[in-house]
Length: 604
Image 1 (spheres, one colour):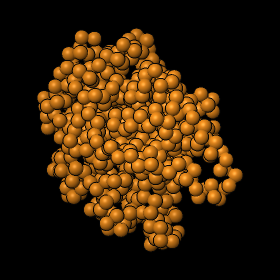
Image 2 (image 1 turned 90 degrees about the horizontal axis):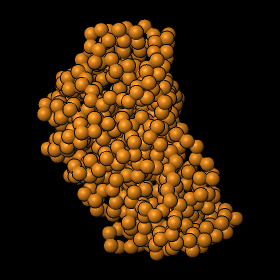
Image 3 (image 1 turned 60 degrees about the vertical axis):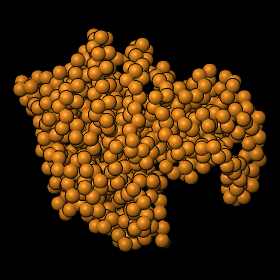
């Protein structure tokens, strides 16, 4: 997933995506300058004034924390790392499909695993992923430090956890893309570790060693990826997840207006060495993991020469170990221009790639600096990638200023003609600190609560977009959105794309599951057949797809069945998205767009 799509789905740069900060209180450390931030009592002065009875507990926690902080760094500290929940209706949270294959959640929290590796290794760690297990009060009482990292869709769950932890007198450390982008929302946390964790976590640890009870740690510096640590993969149960993440690159050379990857990580890609990546693969191998690895880079091919060198070493390493892993990643559409790179990815057993397509309209792409996609045939690119055994998923965005009246038809045709089954359609979102947000602020079009989750329906950019004054009718955009979602996720249209993909993908999979895993796969296959093949909505479509692909291109049946399984999630998600959007439309039509805009701009 590239550009804006990835931004909604990862945590601390290492905190979730890479440590306490990606994608760190109140001492504000900026490079060598240290500015004292108000104490927790001062920070919450207005609340304490309104509720004098709360003053004593704050004072108690302040002074008791001050006494114990000095011992945390060198002592045997208990560190609880918490991944808070994503909505069950998020595009990426296909838990029902996970259950069919005996898993609990799609992806492990890579950022928090990296954070654990950056902390003192004599500490005792425990990781709780609320997407796979319940976080209890006993977990919080156990911990000396509670560390949270996350993104915009996790905003409410992170804020709720800070409050819950403080009620149990826990010390809370927060980082990640959303806290880094808008730290003021997280002022209740004891420590904010912002930016890239490799830089700011050492600053936090030094303050902790000196007895600081709160602090905010910020640095303009970029992490040197040559010093990146191996994540603590031992802290998770591999059997809980479909895939495990691994990062090779941070930063992106492109300059898309709406994307904050370049704001968080810069436009100069920074890489781990091939040896570092192999060391992480070896760590997973030694821990007994086999199967799916997701290269979580925002653009895996940010430097094609370096990626080719890495792939050659991965091929050599994985071949010597009988192909223990297969891979997925995210890339820009120009991946299709490089046959050598595509062949190397096939030889390394890459199976899926997420393309940041954004829009089929070249003029809109150019206006938003997405020049790498301009005048590219999406249909030809996807077909070319499939010829090398990889299925393309795609991200699209609706709501650009330059969208034409027929954009809905263009988008539906692009998705249907290219055969992209897993198409993520989002509403344009002005993320904090992006070029888009700065422009909208200058034009006085940005909503008052632009990047704050204000309703339970704010699950990701599929329900939380258009946080600004649109140049065309907001209701018109939302109606187009519903039309696109209903069209591409109708059973008939979806299964047409599955058949197209199944017939054209030329797989040559290297990774072979062991017998036990093969039995799990067979059980999962039977579950998909039961769920999709005997459903009134999809039964005929499923069996038509199955027999068409199995007889005409048997090597395409595995990805085709996988995509059919994903439709079980998309059906549920479609119903939710349409329902939420229809409520939005009804609310706007009731008040009128002018009144709605005045309210959202904070003028009424």
